[in-house]
Length: 180
Image: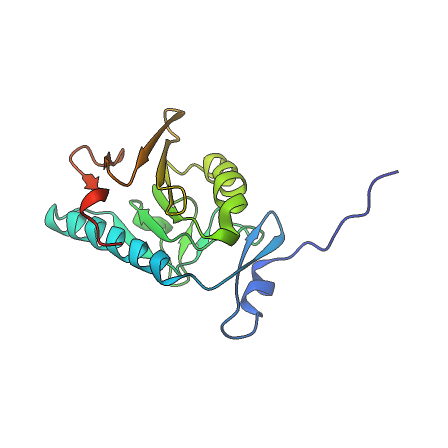
């Protein structure tokens, strides 16, 4: 006898949340999100600024977005995430609602309540959806984990290191110079 199934949620349920309440949707399951800390926001903002300035300086065609920005990972109504930073190079994926499909590069800044989500659930979803590169920035552990999902490669760095972006051959981010 099969186990009883829980309710399967859709993006309609996400959009029906009360104002100010944020959640993500993975395989029809809702994961509520706590407001980010000040340090989380500083890290996200600094990284977004570096990436955005780099893309502008190169007259690049990719577009970076900072949370909250809707990513409909599989282009369906059962998977909706708001990565801290998303870089999308295929403009056909962009709509007024967000990104339909996998961004090329995603950065998540770990919060105490998002640890399992960022290191496990999202890693699996991002890999299977076709994200090319995924960074997990963990201020509590002083660690940046970089997954090059195209080549099934993973490297770890600390906040004293310079980290090279995989999708841009000449972009490196020096974490020890950032103000967090």
